[in-house]
Structure formats: structure tokens, C-alpha cells
Amino acid sequence: MNREHEMNQLIKMNQIYKNLLDEIDVGVHVIDESGKTIIYNKKMMQMESMDIEDVLDKNLLEVFMFAEEQDSTLVQALKHGKITKNVKQTYFNYKGQEITTVNDTFPIIEEGKIVGAIEIARDVTKLERLIRENMLKKGNAKYTFDSIIGKSKQIQEVIEHSKRATRTSSSVLIVGETGTGKELFAQSIHNGSNRSSAPFISQNCAALPDNLIESLLFGTKKGAFTGSMERPGLFEQAEGGTLLLDEINSLNPNLQAKLLRALQEKTIRRVGDTTDRQIDVRIIATINEDPIDAISKNRLRKDLFYRLSVVSIFIPPLRERKEDIPPLVESFIHKYNDRFQMNVKGIDKDVHQLFLDYDWPGNVRELEHIIEGAMNIMLDEETITFDHLPVQFRHRSLFHKPQLKEEISPIAKLESLWNKEKQPPKKLKDQMEEVEEYYIQKILKNNNYNISRTAKALGISRQSLQYRLRKFNRKI
Image (tube, rainbow, N blue to C red; front, side, top):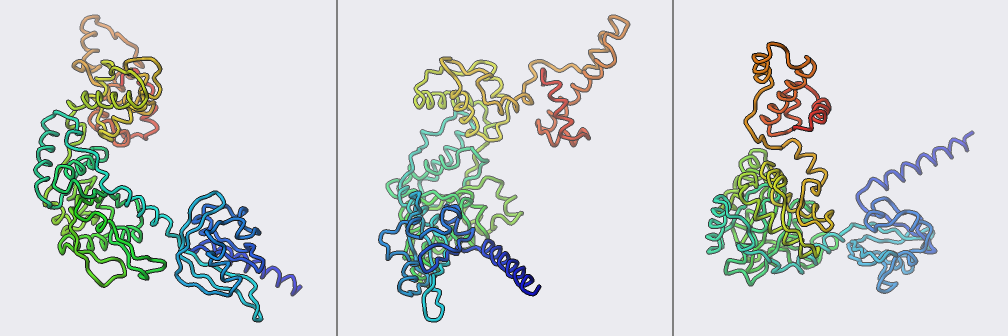
């Protein structure tokens, strides 16, 4: 009985250890005295892009490739009892994928004999890849003000304002909704300035966790943290040029404070360093929401906003400059004619009217994607029609069709017919449906065709509203 209890306890403890290993945020890899893997936790699988069955009970050197066998810290620990701390290691899995980790490795010793080895690893693969990619992207600013399409007064004013910003090296804050072309303006400012021959480096601040973005921006000093190397950050790489920080409101407050210091002092300090380095970099930042809202919701420090917005550029959404839609459509058709070897001439009048009536929440980027999507399903046709448009856009556009003539309420129509015929012209059910349809159309329009807000205003569920819209979709 005691033996059975001990076995149950052993199984229970084994499961607890397994769960613990899978929950910790470091990779754990253990091999036995023959070099076969006996423990391989979930984090290690994620870091090395491997499944457990590909590694467990297999020899380490059959699954992973090293430049030399002795480059494996696990092999060194197993064969020579070598303990390593904070050592960076680059190797490949059997699929050929490159992996870079920082390891603590040590042998397992029983009664004076090495019976295995343990490795605890932290992943720096993403940081290494991003640093290489940003080194390659130096000076990669291809757009100029001639690339900006639009003759509307709104966009021409923004272009003129932006051109004036090319004369100085002051910080610039570009404000605009998603898809309005903020990076296009940033590149144009860089290429129009005396920094055009120097690097233009762009980094989306929302694309990385805080621990990586800080090292990427400011660089690292060797030994500053596990596996850190002496490496310049994006500020140093952009020396003499322009650094674009996209979605600046996604940086945490501590990083925003460090960025503010760099802007004020014209110096940066690598992570782990004690020495400040002088920098000559122009900062252009973008934000996809109203800066006042971002400040009130603690997504943007007020002092950083004032420092960045020496020059403020507000790009209008496409719905506020709809006269620019025809030239934009023409430009996108030309672009994808070249790319797809097609000969599309334009859009028909129904699509033209639909585009003018639509609100374009995704702005210019959404318009481009719709043109590209339409041309992907065309054959030998020369004109884009409603049926060529992407399905999801056609569905949305049902709620944005323009009223081509003055609306007459069903009640007014009923009264007119009653006066003429002196009797009800329709059955009650048909007349009630017409009133219902008219009322839903009015509330939809009042709520900018937003389904959730309209349903709330009507006091019905979204599903109920969508059912009615499908029922009336001939006219809505």
C-alpha cells in the first residue's frame, strides 16, 4: 500500500515539475550521458521552432547543427564538465532555421561522474534579425513629394507645410489615421532635406516588446545583460540622417522618458553603459490618434509631445478629400497594370459613385488594396465593375449607397396616394415594412452606417438589425 502511495506521489510530483518547466519563460534543454535529450520544455520548442517529438530521445548533434561540434555549450558541459554563463550561441535546427540564444550551461554530476548536462537559454534571435535588417535598410527612403497624389486643397496644404520642414532639423510629429500615408510624408521630408544622402531608418515602436525596443534604439554594451554584445542602436546607425519612430504612442512611459532625454541632450547611452554618446539625428515620429487623446489616456507623455511637435503635420483622412479618389484610383490601376501585365482602363460609373460615397476607414491604403483585389480576379476586362470588388467591401458598401434623389417618407407617399385614390393603396403588412425600412435607413445614416451604434439607437440587437438589413438589401 505504501509503495502504491509512493508511486502515486512520484507521478504527481513528476507532473508538477513538467507543468513548472512549461510555464517558465526560459528554455530548458537537458541531455543524458549519451547526448540524447531527456527534458525539452515548451519555451525551448518555441525558441527553436521544433516539436518535442523531433528532439526528445534523439542525439543533440543529429537534430541541431553547429559550425563545429565543440561550439555546442551542451556538448562542452557533457564532455569536459565546462560551465558557461551568459554565452551567446548561434546554430541551426535540422530545418535550416538560424537560432541565436544566450545560455547558462553546466554538467550534471553524480558521485564524481558526469551523467548529463543542462542548458538554460534565453532567445535573442529576433533582436539579431532586426538589427541586421535595419542595417540593410539604411538610406532606404524612396518616396519624395512627387510621390504624393492629390490635388485637393487639404492635401496640397499639408504638402506645402511639409516642404517647409525640410529646411531645418527640428523634430516632426506626423498625425494621421491608419493608411493615410504618414511614412510617405516622412520619407519625402528626409529626401527633401540636406540629410538626404545620410541614412533614413524606420522603426515601428508597436512591433516589439519593450526589452527589445530599448536595445534596438539605444544599442548595447558588452556584458550589460545576458549575451549582450558591443552594438550600436538605431540612433547611432542613423547618424547624420533621419530616424522615423512609427506609432510613438505605443512606447511605454519609461522609454518615452529616455527618448525625451536623447532629444533634449542630443546624446544617447547604450544599455548597460555609463558613457553618453553625441548624436546628430533628426527624429520624425508618427501617431495614429489625436495627440490630446493619447496624452489624456497616458499613452503619450505631455513633455515628449511638446518636444516632438516642434513641427506638427496633420494628414487629412481620405473621406475629407474625396476629390483625390479619381487620381489615386488611376495611379493604383497603373501600378498594378505594370505589376500584373494587365491593361485595365478604369472603373465604371457605379463604382466611381460608390467610392465617392464610402467613408474609407482604412484611407488610401484601403483604396489601394481594393483596386489590387479587384484586378486579381479580372480576366480580359478593361473596366472594374461592382462585381470585381472584394466581397467584404461589397458587403460594407451596401450600407453606404448614396441617395440619388430627394427622400420621400413612406408616410408622405401614403398620404399622397390616399388623397388620390381615397382608399389604402397597400396592405398593412407591406406599408409597415416600408416604414420600417425608411426608419432604419435614416438611423443608419445618422450613425454614419455604424451597425453597433444603429442597433443601440433602435433598441435592438446587432443580429436583429443585420437580419433586417439583409431583408431590405435591395435598397440599402
